[in-house]
Image (tube, rainbow, N blue to C red; front, top):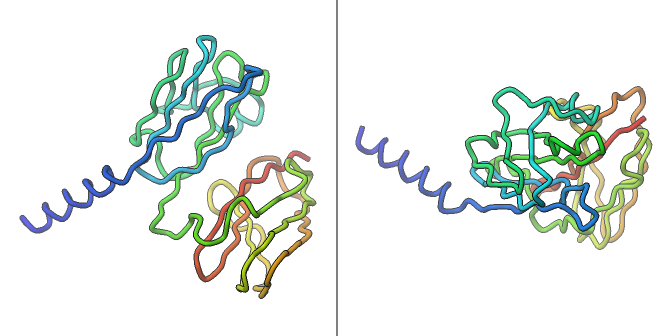
Length: 210
């Protein structure tokens, strides 16, 4: 029993010791969060540093899509000027949030919380070398990878609850890569493009706005 308690305490200490805090601000123009989309690991915190006219309210995806401001039950929030959202409120999955005052004007963002133990994080594939355009899209878009070393990849797309809606065949590439993807009869919302290789998975967000 003592060994189990020690292991649990050590595991919790490891999570806390390796946790980080991501900062989100509002842009110079005022009515936007910067960055509007962040990906963090389970156990991380998010600190909002905002102007005095902005607060933060977590909402449902449907409310977020409609530029609404109705709070999500048991969701996180911050006062005006911002504040820190602790890991207890940042569970695995996608969290949608808006400014409670300026949400109707499109001031909103997304926090994606993932578990690094699953391998869904950036490895040797540089996230900055991956481009998706247009984004937002009606469902037809191009995925471009630049300066990719010799490796085999597979592309898949999932919705916010993890359901896979698209999977490509594995392809071996070396250098630049471009692939046109068409998603038919797909609902509006946020989806995740996953580029999988033997080294792990890189995830990019895409917005369907048809």
